[in-house]
Amino acid sequence: MAEESGEQRFCTNCGAQLVPRAVFCASCGTRSVGRGDVDAHITPGPADGPVVLRFLGSGLQLLGTGIIAFLLMILIIPYGWGVAMLSGWFVNNLAFNDGRTANFSGRGSQIWYYIFLMLLTSLLNIIPIIGGIVGWLVTLRIQLAMSRWFFSHVHLSTGQTLRFVGAYWPFVGWYVLFTLSFITIIGWAWVASAWMRWLCRNVDVGEEHLEFLGSGIDFLWRGIVAMLGSVLIITIPWMAVWYLRWITRNIQIVQGAAQRA
Image (tube, one colour):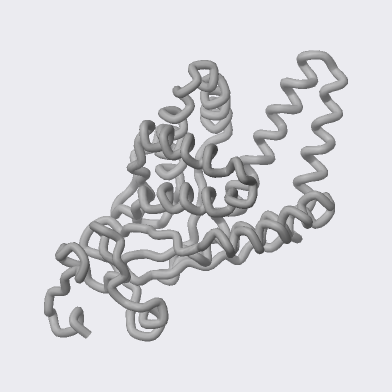
């Protein structure tokens, strides 16, 4: 291979120099090797610069997986299996430009009871004001636990297992700020961008960390397009994948510890 001989490689689409073991171009996203070549010929290792992510899932895949997951989730008891199915579909369709791969090992049996806890917290609403607030805070605690479960079952072929280290009260604060931002009509997009940066910085990847580069204006116009494009209902999976691909390609894995707030 070119990397083994020290020869430099360049993108056939835009001409940018490819990093060692690159699966796709970090500049334009053009695939530099076939997907089968990644597993057969590329040894995962650190790239010379940030590792760029791509999401390879399709709208058709989401339609099929989503229908099954939705049916499981509305039946309550198998709710956890539906969440695990969607999580596995997302993680297993991630690609990295340095050749590493990701897989998801989470199982529904690990989180099946979360839905019952959330249903129980809804009973607190019978207590005026205080009961509702307590129930909402407990629900966010459960959501944080599910976030930690998700990341703790993402394994990279380079040996790392991800870990979400974000604290509970900052998580609550971002949720409150995001909810209040809808009063401004468009402010939610900038809050979403800042929240994503906080989430990524609090994902521990060993000696590396995640960074989110997306802007508020991109969140806004893509959100509007996705909403309009989902009017026909059947197009929702394709719009969701389109939005998800943008979010994913704005996430990079960077060497060094993150500056966490």
